[in-house]
Length: 283
Image (cartoon, rainbow, N blue to C red):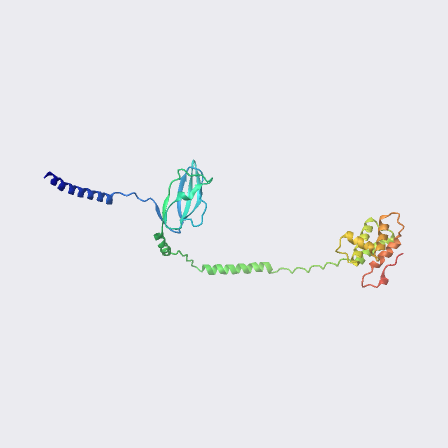
């Protein structure tokens, strides 16, 4: 009798206990997920305050789920405030501190956690929200653009008139006289030689002009001076006159007379178009 009574008493108690457990499971306060839902492909901002070593972003890797950059760092006594920007590329839950590191590559102890969840549902309605944004337009009345265009045309006309109106025509540039020919340069030197007034500077100029003339005759204008001088001394036409000139110029007791040098110079004082008879005859 007592056994049957205890069994009848136990069954309702178990049923009541099971109902209490079920209600506790259904209505027990759950820990709230502290992650932030963010749309994919839209840059977000987070403020991180940290008193440890300077913080840097992890090196970028291809295909990373979150792109992170530090937009600004504010120095405060004993701490730094970081304006961190991040962009989620695919769904999932991520922690911002996993993408940060110390500038020297060390660990960041005590860095606060900042979790966020990439939600593709938010991204689906993002375009619609942007399209619903009212376009702001500025209406300017009072013939503003017509007045502005007219003033621009008048300014251009005034500038062109200022530049070109009443401008005197530039005087024609004076034609530079032609350079004296070799014959014209040798004539006064020949006259000084015949008069016995040829000084050291004139002798040096005479030697230079004759060497120039002989280089042109032998087509040696592009050759170095030592090569040209050797060719002139070996030429049948210019070798003997060169030796006479150098002996007369550089040896004070030279037996070469100035009349002989004048005879060497005289043929070169006649222009190519002038008859040879006009050449000065040595004294």
